[in-house]
Image (cartoon, rainbow, N blue to C red; front, side, top):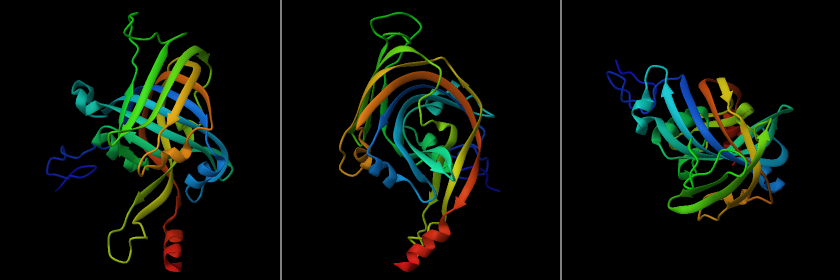
Length: 273
């Protein structure tokens, strides 16, 4: 009998790209709030979500992960990865939510876990300034006056960059946040004649537990999205840039809620064409 939460499934089940949940995470985050074109934000929202505002945020993160049965962090290459997440404001049946049109990671394991949750993960390279426990000219302080930079490159092309100068402690996380994120889980159909009828196409809302957050630092920020030959992040380029943030947080993921099956509407649209 073959075992494994994801492919490849094998006799012992230890070769799966991602082990079964729960998945435990801790990470350092740099984030920048910004406003994009309202028309662009609305255009990226999937069926079932409605436009609420053009307020957006981008998160740059260094993560460390472990499963419930292993100590992956003792083999750091299995446990650590960096990530860039773009979140848009939206509403679902009148409730405020966040939607992610783009997300990039640098590890295949993180990509697989994300696809299971509906995050539209692709491979990209995120680099972030680090702070350390000792004062040094080689690193900023994680407090007033601390300056942090971050870049995202995809297919060797610079796609985004930001700088943050911390000024004060904040009481709240940047918005939109992960707390009420809604994603689309999509798995395409390859059978001839059914390419427009995905095998899985649904709105889901993420669930997390055991969430803890460090003190949150806030300050001014700069943010730029660069043009790319085919990636459309540039369509969401900032029309104004708000505050920048730095914080550490931890959470566990082992559940999600299915909100709406979109396949029937997809089939109806395909039949109409």
